[in-house]
Length: 143
Image (cartoon, rainbow, N blue to C red; front, top):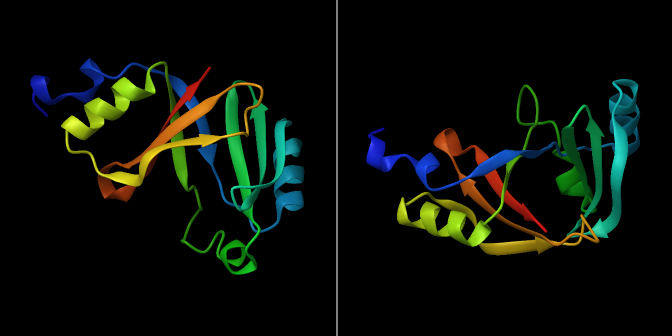
């Protein structure tokens, strides 16, 4: 990629926000990650079609959504080896990030800006794009 095409010149990534790992059995997943030292930091039931658990260990945050739809839930882990849905990067200015991605023609996985109540009392806005090989990358602004 030529220097003038680099996204990093215009997007200021602060760090990894979380890794999203859909689960078919939330309690089993919680127990597994707790055995590794992860602690629950967010527990939201029935939000956006999922029960959401976010867990943290050593600064690494994983999101464990369990779909309320039994058909969708049964498909968790069926993509082959592993089932990481996306990774999320922290940014300070989501509007600027969105504009840069649009200008570069990066395809959006979900149109527009989404919000979630998962991080209450903080405000959370995010966008989701496709990277190479259709890897989903979420950009998250927490305030």
